[in-house]
Amino acid sequence: MKQVKELYRLITSFLSRSENIEERKELFDWFDQQSVGKIPEAQFSTIQKNVKNRLLAEVGLIEKKSSTIKYLQIISTAAAILLIGFFAYTYWPAAEHTASNKLLASIPPGSEKAIITLANGKQINLDELALNQSVQIGETILTKDAQGKVSYRNVKTGNIVSQQNILKTPKGATYELALADGTLVSLNADSKLIYPSSFESGDRIVELEGEAYFQVAKTKDHKSFIVKTKNQQTKVLGTKFNINAYSEEDGVRTSLEEGAVIVSKQNSAVRLRPNEQAFSEDGKLRSKRINIDQVLSWKSGQFCFDGTNTAEVFKDIARWYDIDVTYNGTSNASQYSGKIPRNLSLEKLIALLNYANIQTKAIVKKNNRINLIIT
Image 1 (cartoon, rainbow, N blue to C red):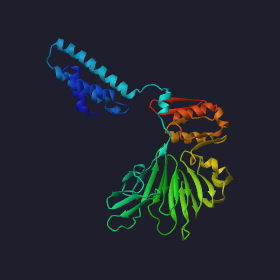
Image 2 (cartoon, helix red, strand yellow):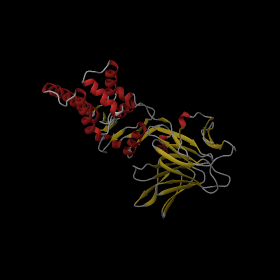
Image 3 (tube, helix red, strand yellow):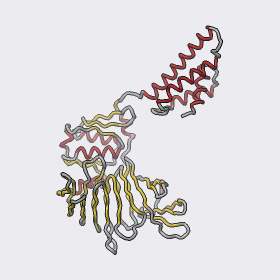
Image 4 (cartoon, helix red, strand yellow):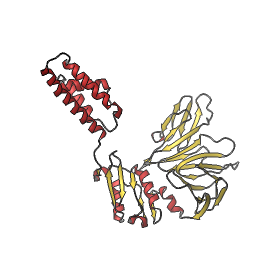
């Protein structure tokens, strides 16, 4: 936003008809480019008062005749109209309206991207760092090798540097990461992994928020690999499993594809076999048989409805397209069973939902976000 003083000057010049062509264009362009929240609401009275005072000073109200006062009243009215129009434009956004097909078609599916935050707070967009490319941060060189594994070496000594990192995928994105021990981690949208750049002695420990699929590498010394989530941890030696630990879900769900894992929570623990899932019920961990292919459908590029998980899939859709979804569980969607590809534009996804007799309505909310309503 332009500096407030400059705004006063432009408005004053415009209302007193002393602006030049460039100033007029500058004021109009500035006004057209404003969006919700550009000026704090608390500044409204200050701007209004100062503009009025400046207008009065501009034409010399003090000790002037009534004709001048009448002229000033017109100018002040014009100033008030301009300010009211500006704040109406700024704080009273357009009402909700139906999203056009063109807008929906412009919203793509998620892609592979992530941001890594180093121990010193430096952030790097990993999707902008090519394979076999390095970047130097201070005295540390960060390299992403041909397999996507990120490593760190000291510039002077060449030795591997161990530090704690945070990898975060935004909404509408996934990312595959190779850890220092060879473990492969696939992060779903809106997820965060805290991990060391190299594993020292002891257990290999990472922390997860959101959802991730792990292919844990076995080590010669048989170090355990531990994934910590909220109030829970999963311990393995070498295996393939998925953890769903989104904060908006009822609890953490750990699903095993291959090998064996032990999931523990306070004084409760379960050992999983392939095609089993650990979940929390009445404060205790329990397990059940599952269809692992449905759990891992996000990895294979699909939204998988099984007739019971509709609300969960719609949450996944919301994260994947970075939109809002309103679903109350009473529509035909609650019984729907089928698969829909994740590589579609939002317009095509909605078309497939409607074809499956899941009636939808997409609106643009006052904050310009898309809200997909399941009717």
